[in-house]
Length: 216
Image (cartoon, rainbow, N blue to C red; front, side, top):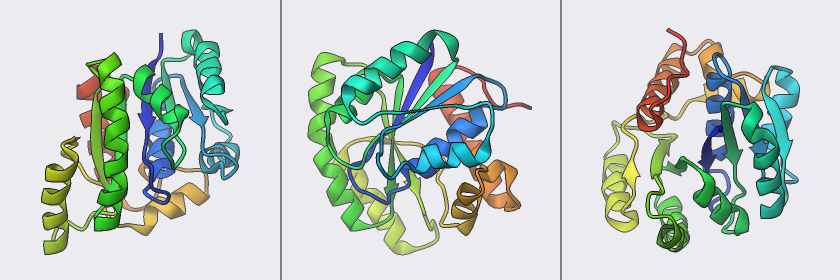
């Protein structure tokens, strides 16, 4: 049985594919991982995997039935499945919530992203009525910790969304887009700060799911 981690967010451009690809690449250094790209036809994660030509299994899905089918196909042969969900509230989002061990919600430090994400809370609450132990966490992306607005928005997100936040945040760095365009992860890129924060994020996820996947 694979550990399933989904990246969900209703707002486009929030960093779902950035986190999905970096996480899948990081896990693949020690585990067999599949990446299901549900953001079609954009297919950022699938395009990244095609450039990478690595041992990551790539699959695509355009509806919730295909997501379920792909999970059933990949479940026994992989250690992890990472789902890159589409930027809208759809049946795929509901399926991802129900089937995942951990759901990550990328959130940029802007009021617009907090407002958009509030629409997702109703879906999360509805899913929790059927599966009470759903673990959903905010991942701050493109975060500038030193700015006052970022700190204020973090407080606003806590008050409005009532979701737990991961301790480790991803900064506003070109390394993420540069690595993505080359089929790489930031842990393989030249930016040491980006590498460090992604490894820290990965270690935090390891503790949540109680499975080690980062090589020492």
